[in-house]
Image (cartoon, rainbow, N blue to C red; front, side):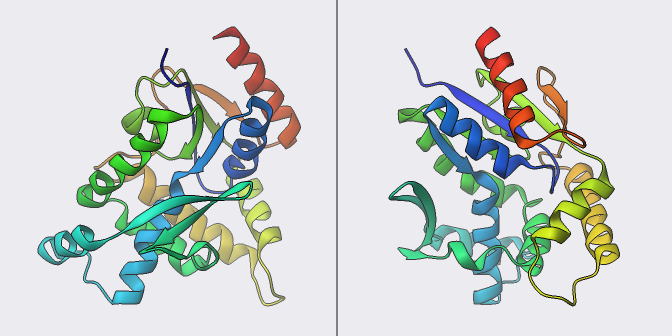
Length: 219
């Protein structure tokens, strides 16, 4: 019997990370934030000053890229060439660069093997934007988690440190990212045809996970 794969796709700020972590705990399986991989690529593009829109330059860069998930106690950390980069990939700048660069087919292809290798040996909850549509089209259960833009922007605003943050700017950036993710030609953000769609605008994390567990039990 093969491993069980559950995918959770959706736009930024919908609560995918928190929900995915709790769901994986309830199910006793591994949680993988695939968005971290794209952020890792973006971080290395920034650090190495890569012209990622030049296909030849990008191909050489990706050939030498060494991203991996490593288990550290009760969590997975993201490493680049063996060094932990987890704490450097959550800035707004890296988020926007990840959204733009992830549209490149070469980048998506380069990260497919990492994601699928993890799924070969363990029951896993995969969080991302094209998990159910492209990476794991045969997943046991697929979810698409979404919420109103204003709700998502408020959540992201509340998570951000500092006193100079501006919620209108957060919402504007989130709208740009939504458009980038849903309109790109390669693996656009959209629900899989057989995905279970959940509107998390006015639900708690526990309520969302409860709904998911109900669907999983029925599958």
